[in-house]
Length: 209
Image (tube, rainbow, N blue to C red):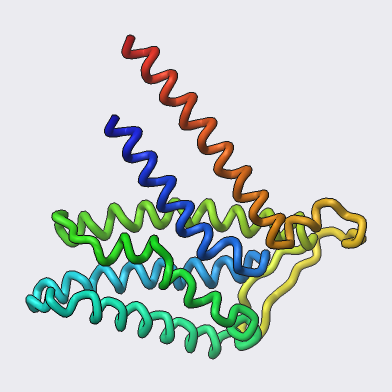
């Protein structure tokens, strides 16, 4: 039951993070890299700031202080992005702030934790890192098969490498570049995960029988 409960928590985390990062963002690998760097920065700084609040015994103000910290860290990241790649910052717009408002950040940073700081950061960054790898694969698939390109962040612009050309009006793969296409791809990812999880549970129970 413990393993099942853990898997359910992983699914909740991945789904909440995916809906706030993967779906509203443009289907380009470069945008995915930027958003995931911001997402992980928010988690690290939020965890450290949460422990600082506990250390200073300001728990009565924790909710307000954490909200201010999350907003401040997001604004800082947005300004860094404006400096590095203004066109990307302009295109993303409010999407940059969505991870900060997601249930993932709230669950990560506002919930009390009994672990030590080192263990807490390690566990949550392992989970966040696992999601980031899956998310990068998600953005890569959309970039390659939705646009026929590979993109990366460059100074003051987005580097675009054309891999193959197709007529977007008749190409079925270009559907992946749309929001409905992203939802369908996300559903496929979760279908694969659930199938693998169920097979794992069945094999584990059969081995214990």
